[in-house]
Length: 239
Image 1 (tube, rainbow, N blue to C red):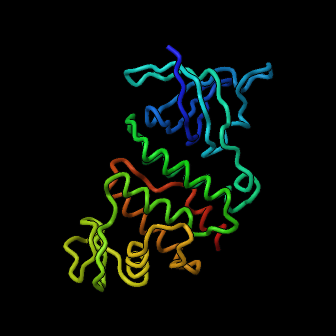
Image 2: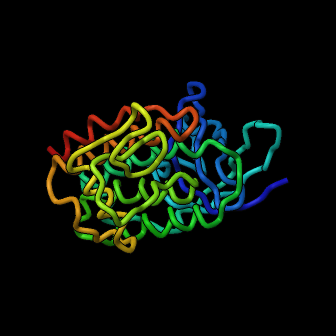
């Protein structure tokens, strides 16, 4: 039976010489994988590879299969066309990174409308912003709230952040912890009302250290999560 849903593209992989498997996070069903047959042929078709840019917001029509079987994607329509994201090399690389990050995080076929709306509205904000070098960091941190793993804020001053236990402390109870400027930066970000215009991270080193911390944090708290390959490319872009 055919059904519709809004969806955000997380990426695709080759399935055969002419077909691909699309990964997306949908508003109505959570994470889903779709097969698109014949997309690499020269014949006239309804769906093209050019429409499958990372984090594009779509309305899709598909047959909703169960038991982890691939759904057949029939039609797609871009409902929120990006402007600056598709023309700014920094924004392009940030979206490539976030798409890979999300594909390694959102693997559960579980509906979460609030999470979808957070992703959608964040991307629209990013597209309309002039400069947002901290967007990906704040996005990942806020994402942890929707996943139920957000670090616990404390207004007291601490020397360390215990990654395993997700708390600020002066005496880490585990071997996985960070110290120094990244602890202060994390505490300052958490202590301010969430806003993508947050100015806590002002230089390359702060951003790089925060990104490395967040990846370590997700590696410990999200089952199966591994460091995205695009991290190194992103660090080069900002260096």
